[in-house]
Length: 182
Image (tube, rainbow, N blue to C red; front, side):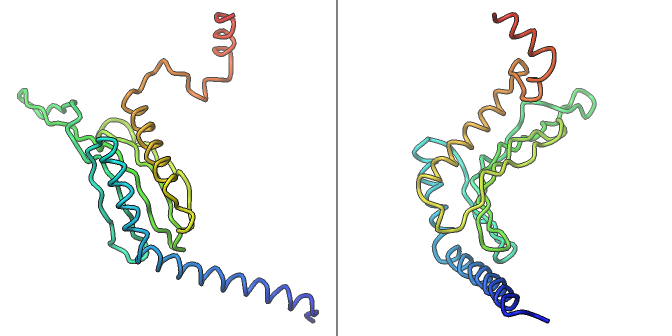
């Protein structure tokens, strides 16, 4: 038998569920009415201010799972695959992108897709910056995301095997490096 407290707890949980569903609908409306255009405007302004040649587009194959994508496009990688008789085919490079993706619940996922050269290793998984409610995305966040994107793809482009990897901090190598520096 349910006690009065059990019923009260159950009602609170149902009310919370209804609130989450209402928020999803509200977030989707904000995205459609203003947020996606605001994201495009912010990214356009930041790319122009930084002198970065980028394409900003909207991906909308599935309603309410739309995205705004700043991409640096594709290019020849400078690497070529032999196709025979001294002929080489350029390996294509995806130059990276910054994505604002609407989630199933109307919140916004911000991710960085790293550059990738076809047939040259495996692409890195996207880097999640954060998930936001629409009202949480303010101007300073866009600048921070953009700067993080530029820093991360610059690091990718300037890969250096001399850099200490986080997983190399354990073990004898780190001990010898400390002794050499001492």
